[in-house]
Image 1 (tube, rainbow, N blue to C red):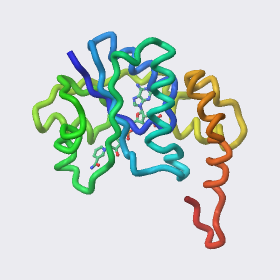
Image 2 (cartoon, rainbow, N blue to C red):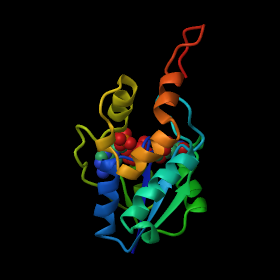
Image 3 (cartoon, rainbow, N blue to C red):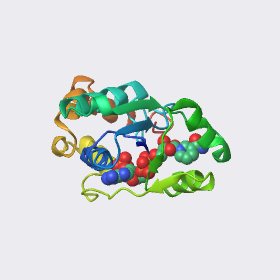
Image 4 (cartoon, rainbow, N blue to C red):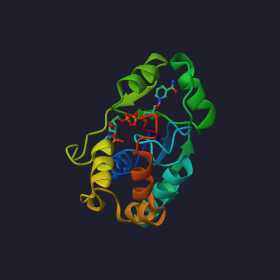
Length: 175
Ligand code: NAP
């Protein structure tokens, strides 16, 4: 059986990693759709699609799970009613969708796909916006993401990027 897991992964953190492991305990293979690929270099969406794919691949490889996961970039489209067809056109076939996102669940249920909720692992700290805040403030964040992801973010100067794009320009606008 093959599953689908959709997320923005900004960044790919321990909660996402545990979710992938949980799903792979129930499926043979997993398609991981990296959503909102057109967005990067802003406070909410810091990393490019390529960077998110790279950080996920490194974390999966270190856990010998890369052979069971297929990572597919999926851009947003301006029409929710067509989004499932858009995902289907980009991804290999899958039998079940794993998601907690209300819109994602609704759209796949409408076309008769089986949808399963994923337990939220350590949601208090494993939360993308919380982790980005910690990065900005200089507080500890590395232990909340897989080691390979932390190394990659440091290598890409991700913290410096987040700080730069969080500064206001002369019009008081933040990226
Ligand atoms: P999501 O993956 O369902 O995640 C929702 C929230 O739950 C996020 O805050 C996420 O974490 C968190 N989360 C999910 N699983 C978790 C787990 N097991 N443990 C801990 N936290 C977990 O929603 P999403 O990230 O917004 O991804 C949905 C994607 O589909 C987006 O890219 C969206 O744009 C796309 N989409 C597009 C369209 C369209 O183009 N018309 C329509 C529907 C959906 P973090 O915040 O920590 O990452």
